[in-house]
Structures are given as structure tokens and as C-alpha cells.
Image (tube, rainbow, N blue to C red; front, side, top):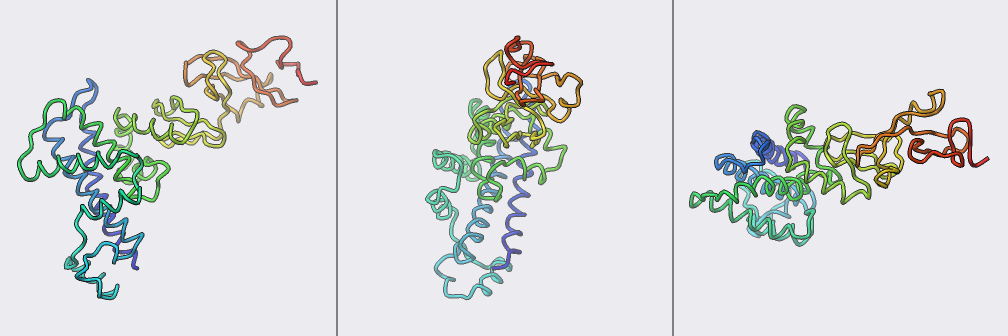
Amino acid sequence: MSTDVIERIRSNSWLFLQRAIKELISHDDSNDDGLSEERAVIATSLIQMSFELSLVAHFIASDGIKGVITDKDKHLPEAALIEKLKDNELATKPFNALKAEAIRDKIFRGDDDENLINEFQKIRNKLVHINYTFSKNELYDLKNDLTYFIVHVVMPTLSEERHNPSEIISIKIGSKSFKKLIRFPPYAKEMNRIAKQNSNNVYRCIHCGNNSLATDHSEEYCYSCCAELSHAGFIDCPYCKSERSMIYDALNISLQGDHTIKGLCLNCSSDDLVFLCEKCGVEIALEADGDEDKCHPGFCAVE
């Protein structure tokens, strides 16, 4: 099976999705307002078109070209089917059939996404066929619902990168648009959700400010801006008791004369001096936890 066909379909799907994302991030959310009706109509339509194409590409990639065609053409060899597809003459399964198969195969992120997909399709159909008018509440909810739909429904079918949508989105939409996207509150909310699905400890990222920085051992990574912080050190915060929430410069702490360096809690914003004992390797917040019985400069409690 030629990958050219799959890539061409995915490329078109991305084209619609890129435009949809740019519509959403053009919305001024500084006052937490709903979308304009024009922006809602355009974004909804673009996302639906992207979704339909992404499903076709997904099933061709997983089942071959015969996974998306109607019974009428199933007797044809694959090469002939590909040529018909390239010539826009191939009869493919209707969207509802592919959607049902995707739901059956559980390729989306959320357990309740079937209802969302069905509701989203109803809105799209009303827009196309009867000039649907959104209510004020719908325009408010849509900025969150459309963002959720992109992250949890479209992206799992469009990209093989299931761990973090930001990685592929950042490449596809460019740095300027991506910076606007991660500042868009509904997107930040979804990245927080994904971070919590993948990590036990999630805090405010020192780079982008979103609450999407995972600090589990060997998984120090921001799901919003994709910052990788495996070079940093993390200890439990003695003030708010959060696990691995106090960050410090692990690369330079041992270069300091007294092996201490400033630390900052990414949960409660408390700061402290972090001490690294060169003898036993313990890390401790001196100002909160330090006492004569614990490791401190010039003394190791283990010896």
C-alpha cells in the first residue's frame, strides 16, 4: 500500500485543522467570552472536514485501501483502487460507517467521546443544511468543546503521536501560532488534563506558565510547550507538601562552594535554598527542613 495516498489525505486534513486552530486562537479570550458566531461556524466546519479526512487516512493506514471502500469496488485489485482514489472516482464508506468503526475500536482518548462526536456532527449538519443559529451559551461552550474535539478526537486519528498532541501541532502550525495556542485557556486546560492522565505530579511550567508540567522521575516534561526538564532537579516542597514540586538547577548546584542553590516550588511559589550533600547525595530545603541533625553544609547526617 503506497504511503503517498495516506500522506496526501492527512495533508489535506491538516490543512483544514490548521485553519481551524488559527480561527480559535484569533479569539480574544482575555474576558472569558464566547466565540463570535462567524468564528464558531468557520471553526466547526473546518474541524469536521479535518475529522472526516483523518478517519479515512486512519483506516487506510490500519486496514489498507479496502478498509474504506464500499462493497461495489471490493473485487478490484489494490492498485486499481488506488488509481481510482487518485482520480476521485473511488466510492468510500460514508462518514457514519467509519465513525462507528472508530468508536468500536476505541481510538479516541475519552470514554464519553461518542456522545460528543454525535452532538458535534448534529451541529455541523445544522450549519450546512438549515443555517443554524448558536445561542450565547453555545458560543461560550464551543470554545472549550472545539478545543477538546481537536485534542481528544481529531488528533488520535490524524497523528501517530498519541502521548502529547502539542509535539506535532507545534510543527504543523508554526512557532508564532503555537505560542498563541498554548496561551489560549481552553487549550491549556486540555494539556493539563492530558498531563494528569500521564503523570502523578503536575505543576506550573517555568517556561509557559501553564499547569501542565509533569515532574515524575524521568518524565519531567511540559505537555503545553513541550519543554523537556530532565536536566533540572526536583524535591518535595516542605511548605505545601507537594511531591517533586520544588525545582532547582541540578547541573550547577555541585559547582557552588557550599553546594546550595535557589529552589522554587511550582505549586505554592515558595522558595528555599536547596542543599545537595556531596557525601550521601541527599537533597534538602535548608531554610524549611534544615536542622543540626540533618545534612547541611559541612555536615552529613549519614556518616
